[in-house]
Image (tube, rainbow, N blue to C red):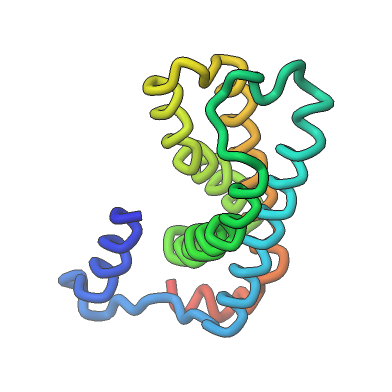
Length: 172
């Protein structure tokens, strides 16, 4: 999170020596709407995966002795979880427009795959610190994180199309 804030600050203050450089314009309304919709899509898919599909696909998921909050307490925290998804994943959509100004579906899927790895790095850290966080759970969650963010970025690329080839050529 701190890295994302520093990247946003850096973009605001840094200007290259080539003064002719201009950033690709952002259609903020479309970017926010489709970034938030992309985050909601991932939230719904992720909750659905963990509530239903993972338990069908994998024996003992999560492990019976894995430390968890009681269901009622976890349910009360869902709005906080939802807000973290909205904030983090919609920022990833915006970063995609900066990293790949010409975008494209291939770039969206590639960027999504890398984001997925970055999203689950805390899971890898929990794996080291918690003896009940098994290799099994880690092997499930790392690809799941990559697949979900690949879906998110593909959806965002498909939905957020404020560009024409001539506009991108003029701003590149």
